[in-house]
Image 1 (spheres, rainbow, N blue to C red):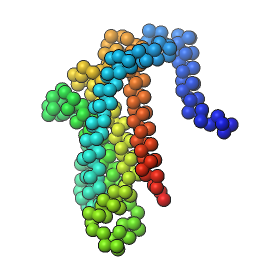
Image 2 (cartoon, rainbow, N blue to C red):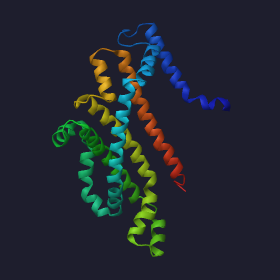
Image 3 (tube, rainbow, N blue to C red):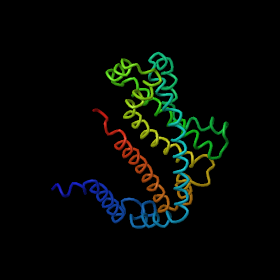
Image 4 (tube, rainbow, N blue to C red):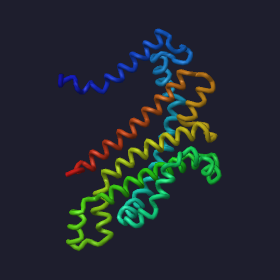
Length: 250
């Protein structure tokens, strides 16, 4: 049985494809609306070597830029806020308010500020991801182990040194939680923005255009491409976390 354990993650995939084939075979759903897995995956393969591949790259670019901007702003701010409980409490309502506001409600504001270009899609995604990362970094700093902080202060470390060498490292596990959640949220916002903010490319545009033209295999192919991108980005951050934060909890 142990030899079969590496294959366990594929059980769900095989089961999903089997149910899909069964639904198509029994015509539980109109075949026009639900093409077979073979047709869909052929459309995905063909598309990734053409227009869909270009859209995929554009979405990767926008998502990457948004998470880089969000992390560059949120991580330093989160460390500062988390190191001062009074400062964090004074801004907690503002942070939670905007973090709880649907990103789609912010589209008009960012459209007014940046127009309909890439700047809007990247900035609104960065804004949404930034708040998630900021909250997690601040939480990680506030819950840093007191023994290590006290040890650093006893050894004469300056406040800046404590922030960079102790609090930053102590908050890394929670920071990566924020980064994983942030990149997932950024991808969602980017795809939705590509659907509705005058985009001519990107996976969101591809899904919306295929649906409008009733090209169902192409639509499902774009959806699967977006799902694969989200899974891949989350896995990438998880691998980086395991590589650089292997000491977490020790």
